[in-house]
Length: 174
Image (cartoon, rainbow, N blue to C red; front, side, top):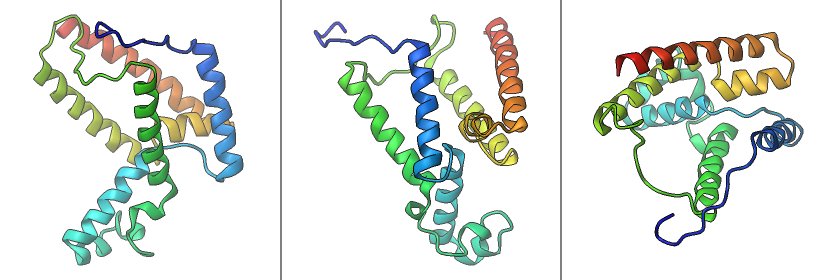
């Protein structure tokens, strides 16, 4: 970095993939679950619902089951996992000299606010899709393929090709 901070190189992709595979196996062995993230937001939404409108949340067909045994989001393993991942990512970025608050705009073709709006829309759509699929890319894709589930393999292939297609389309539009 220009401020004199030493920036350490990124891990080689093969090494990162092998470590991710080991982490997946360890999560199954130690915790009994794979990795995931989308359930965190549902748990937090259920907790917020109980704070704002408990009767409506309890009677909701989707959120009601999440609050049957209380709505403490930190009682859910997936919330603790995501908080741990966020803390670990922050520590890794700081220790590697790569922490910087910025919005990448892609060669100046799109401004910061449109980029943030697109990220919000894309994140909301991915979150909605992950709830319909009963898991996110890490839950269905990585953990599903680790368990040799055919749905995990299909999901990753479709996710990859849809991502490539949308990326190519958006590059032509912007």
